[in-house]
Length: 402
Ligand SMILES: Cc1ncc(COP(=O)(O)O)c(C=O)c1O
Image (cartoon, rainbow, N blue to C red; front, side, top):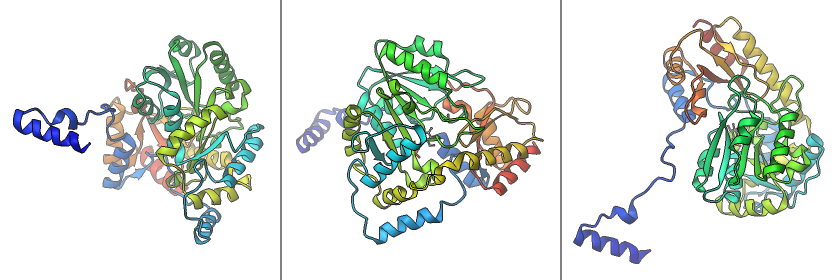
């Protein structure tokens, strides 16, 4: 490295060779800028708007859970955790998987604790995808899948979900599959639309995987935020799919602690071996006292089984508060996001509308077009209702006057 630097300096001084040849930074992600989430949250902060844009709760984490983290910190559990995660937590996750999905998972070989779902998503994609492989992403999509695939040199094929129901369009998906298809990424319950996959969808996917042989990455971070008595259709419930799938989860979402960035991935042993190789050099391991605290906290299933009711109540409060507004709700079956159409109010593009609402009216949201490859604008805004009732009330009061 030292020799190379010397050579560059010499050539550039004497022959006017551009130093930039070896030193220039050629972006691997030329289309990636500051995310809309950062932009809208910053704008909300600057103008003092109510922030319903980014997906995080504004109510506290359980005192009991915080006490457990503090307890383990004081006990001296402050050094590196084992690379795949604390054994106690992996065991507790396996018990939770058995309880919720009725499946047996080997915590030694099939579960890895990650620094948030984001790290797990990246590790799965990096472990599986090679240059030139095709990755199918369903549009609109959460923003981390595509850059992770592109960094591996993959070709990303975006397939639109149904424009009204946001259900998967199986004909379009099968048409996008080619011999180069390596991975399909799905997300249920779905951010940003709140749509959830049905059992038939998983069965259709199972047929496709069997016929065309590709891997599936299932982003299930909102597994417990699902409404109206629906059952979360985890990919792990389908034995023939599970063999070719990695499923990703987030304790940040489940326990209102997005800042703790703790999640996990479940995958079959051969794939997990490769995922762990990536995880080992991305972060090596995840915050030790938090893992131990979560292992304790998972012993009480009520801590996650109460979530559908808790968030359904918030969704219903927000819908009721918004009843008199001219915004029209799009049915939401899961996640803590509610889409509203403002087509009856304005024909501004959605990015402009979101900025106007934040600056002029004091409520921040996310324009849905940013989740699409081509920026399809259906005059929809996404509002996060993981907020205290007072926050929702204040926001709705403003929105109802528009
Ligand atoms: C669909 C989806 N996947 C993954 C994540 C990231 O989860 P984590 O905060 O655990 O990294 C989010 C966060 O908003 C999300 O909405």
